[in-house]
Length: 436
Image (cartoon, rainbow, N blue to C red):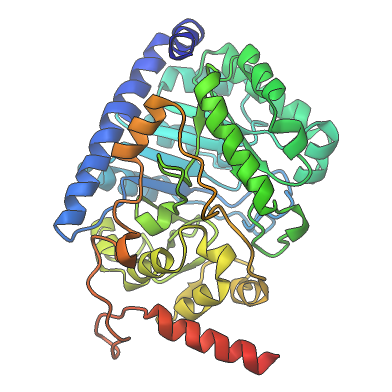
């Protein structure tokens, strides 16, 4: 299987792009994780992978979207993005996830990518703006992999994405990417309406025949102003998706990404482990894209290093998340996030200004943590890679990440604050009892 995959990449992808990926994402990406681990031992913190939502605008209106796509366009300036990337590169980072909205609606996206030939970018996109000309430019740049979202068949795609003829336009962008020999991926937010169509070997085989080099099946997260909780998967369905991913990795000549499990099949949260954080179109530094609260911004008079090392909100989020669950704390314990936001007076980083109300109205539900039903990696290479470069980094050892200090009660203003989960639990229970 590994030989087949290597042959596919060698024959179907531009050789220069393969080298850029192996060097900028492969070698340098591994090196950035090693530096991350060394920093943790010194009590320092800087995530090896940074995700930037560079624009809020989008041409679609997806079910369950948490981005303010209908608000007036807000975009990160070229100067701001360059500043973030340059500082991160100086600290050893090489990989950046580019999100939106729809990233290709940022008028200077290609300019930004061209400024950093020594970095590697994964652009999360619906594919509608990847014309033949754009695909040709991406091939010329060589440091970009488009990750194109496919949400179901023609009917389901229109329903999920809120517009007509969505799939045909997405497939056109996919075909343009493949024709220009880009290292191209397909992502699916697996939910109730597409699990039976896309979590199938036939679908993966079709993608392989088309020339897609990797896939990412991530589970739907009901958050935001129109959460659509009816689309969320049951624990049994999430278990099914995990097993499918593990099997495909071991049996099919296509790469399979996942961000929520280690080599033993134990769940993890990338934000809780500290391996990544998120920057919004307004420049707010958030734990992850679905936690839309912040106390710092890249526009503050601080370096990125200072923000990540001095932010009490980010630090306490990591600690709280790692103590309360191996899954997604937002889904399982929205009450604790609400208390954390209140403790730090974190601002609502949305344009709509209703994130606090949305959080208060969320009902706890299961996430990727399914204790007792762990599905270990079958693939030797994936198991090896995750064991050394993608695991929990000690975040869940006794609930204390390596880079945290011991828990202490919430301090007075001006001093370091830590969140005592037992105290938050007690307060949440009191509030629940009172309301009932």
